[in-house]
Length: 327
Image (cartoon, rainbow, N blue to C red; front, side, top):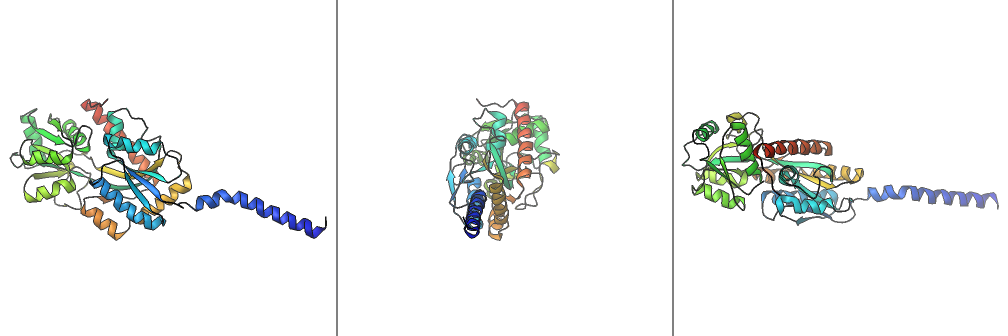
């Protein structure tokens, strides 16, 4: 074989080998090259669903691919979470996780998935406080007065929730534990009926979401005593936190974040995290989210994992102290 032909064959082989070596990287760099499904483990129409759809709208622009919302509600978020835990770890099926699906549920029931080990954290998106509201007929005008009243009348004050294991329920249990009170939990099938019965005076109080409680608080239908988060809500800066009103350390912010199935490739996680961070800087998203009571808090995957671990440990302790267990 003449030298020129041998050199040509060698170069062709080198190019082919280089193409093979670079093929996976090129494929990885192409992510995403088709629409992404974001499973929302909640029914349509609520605050979490609103936030997920708002994020999906702006995330689609950042990724230049459609992000499709798919609601799979039920069992406190467990149904949708399990679905994603069993999905292929390719970045095309994600879950818009929240407090109940990945922090409260594992504290009160046996799950078909491990909320930490079976998922890959991508990014924290937002925190949302609840608010403690009472019927105007309740004589307490502050958190301290409510605690004193509850201690004077043990077992008499009743608090409504959206159901056993819901964030309002667990907020009430943490309140009882920290304050040394014995308010009685009354579960409802949804936050709407719970709030309606507090307004009507059938029950004394509830821990409502900010969007659900604020209109009734401003109208005087209920009296607002405090927000449940670690700091005051930007939507209602004049209302103190429960922590600064008599229960130091009280904090039951709900969290929302994006997770993928276990084994999500590092380059996919990085791409999604960057895109979510960029989406969360959108003035439109920030404005619409804040008007619904959400505090936008972008994070690294590691910060989300740390937050999830801390939240799970907190709610496990609350469940153990209150002997809450759902079979």
